[in-house]
Length: 69
Image 1: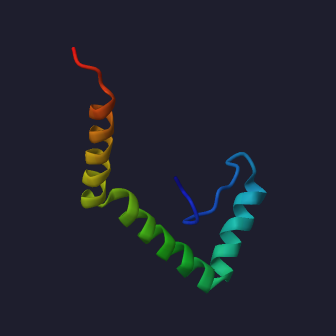
Image 2 (image 1 turned 135 degrees about the vertical axis):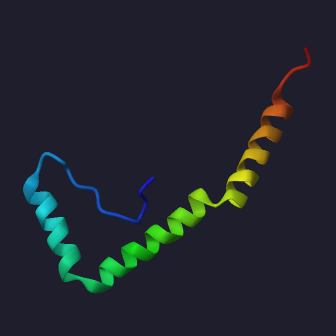
């Protein structure tokens, strides 16, 4: 789900979280790239036109596989 739009850290490791946060604070270009990637990911995953197309394709596939009753 996250893809290249974020950083995964273990919630039980404070040092890892601190390192990831420090990395974001120090690297402006990296931070901007993650933000842009997150924006594109949201457009890809939550755009209603894309979701409608995916549902239509899914329903078409399911409809073609169902046997007559």
